[in-house]
Image 1 (cartoon, rainbow, N blue to C red):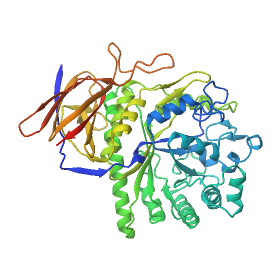
Image 2: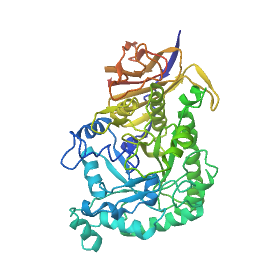
Image 3: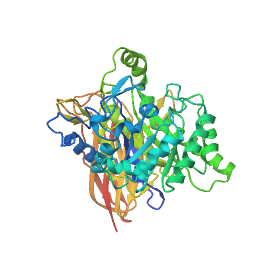
Image 4: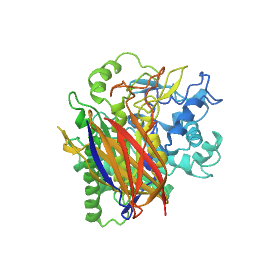
Length: 510
């Protein structure tokens, strides 16, 4: 059975400009993200520095723009000095956050050089768990001060005469969480973040700072945490963070597929709090929302099964942690979350898919073996490649789907972007069992139409994954018919199978 979805693209109603930083990612010293992920010196694809060329090629293909580093929970116990200087002299440390051993063979110098080669802007996080103002100031001076001080000279002695010039800085990580090393109350963290921000701005006034918001929308302190932290830091920080992970609850795939609705409500709540605090303190400078961790993640399995097993016994180097195998369903949800981020481009200043390699990641590797694209790679890559310019909020007439968490939601979620004469349409089809004919009205003639769909291959189900030996899921071309009426309005028609994500691109013709 096939239903019809009608979408109108109002070209005269152009919305917010899309920041390239909306397509960021995240590399944490956790599991096999760094070691046996981007860095594996013994691999046949390793370059002279030990970084895998095949992984680097996939990172470039993914099209990410920003990379948050080095954590995450890891940063709350990290001593940045351990990762600079001669490698043979670097200390080996216990990483209490992830119950593993950190070799420190990759640090600020190595990672920044790799990130530059990958085309990624580094978003550096400072430790406000076990450390504080002085250590953050030292790291900033080491990284960004040109010359003439002990720390800038130390950087030069370590092989980097020029400053790293890092503009983006996170003031700690998830400090509201009782699992976090150095967990603090909102007042404790807010005051420390303000003191750190003030000191860092004394050293480099051109930096951008991100205050740590709530770890998730369901935290019991959500809302009050943001208000308290912003009352301490408003006027000192440029962004406040949102972390958002989604998983499928047993017997409730509909709510999982509607995760974008949950993210939308989360972002709206944070935006309202920002507006309240800015008005309360008469703050003129904007405060953006940095969704600096988001993804699909089976947290229940991690917390109830994997974590108790991993956090006992030995302290391994680069253990396998949360290496979720992503399904077609997960890919559609990731695509729908990207649609939500685009819809909120006016308030979302940046967003980082967490993480980049192996750890709940779009890219997977095997030690000594291949690297491959997970299903979630494709909606991210295709969106990052085409979503430029400005957002257009489309009008959707769709069947509805009942969900336990969010009530009735549209079966099809959609957004459009426009950049000069280039237009892109993005769709997430949430129905599990019914195809839909999508009829799109665009008030312009179109040329160069292309439609790509990510869905389960013929004969496969929604749980299909891409593995090391077989990658059946990828974007496929689908036909699009176009009729142009006497007024020069284009009427596009395409069919989306059940549970699918799609991108349509075209050029406007005068």
